Length: 159
Image (tube, rainbow, N blue to C red; front, side):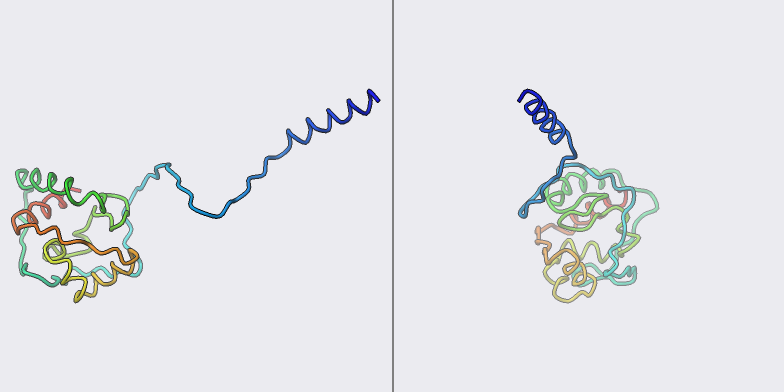
């Protein structure tokens, strides 16, 4: 009897020390680990077009060679207030990552997207492609003035 009991206890210990199998449960799962993003990748379905100026009031934007730090400061404050709900510099969120945006889009396009997202989403092919790429998450009109949009545009230059 004692040998049988010892054998059962030993078997139970061996089974409990065996390989742990995880069961996958269906449903919602949230992973809070941060992933390091080294570079911004352009979405495969969205073309790069530096000649497209978009649809809206902005027809021409010329950036000075030097960054206007006063505009950057104002633009960063506005960006932190209204844009970070959907955008980060180096990581996709609800909207695209904005680091290097001027390597993919013209300054006029960026400002028209800021000032006239409704018109852009209806008429601009790149805005339509981005809408599709980001699961139909529309960019809301924040009703910025042209000066505020220009400040945000200047801030995006330093990302």
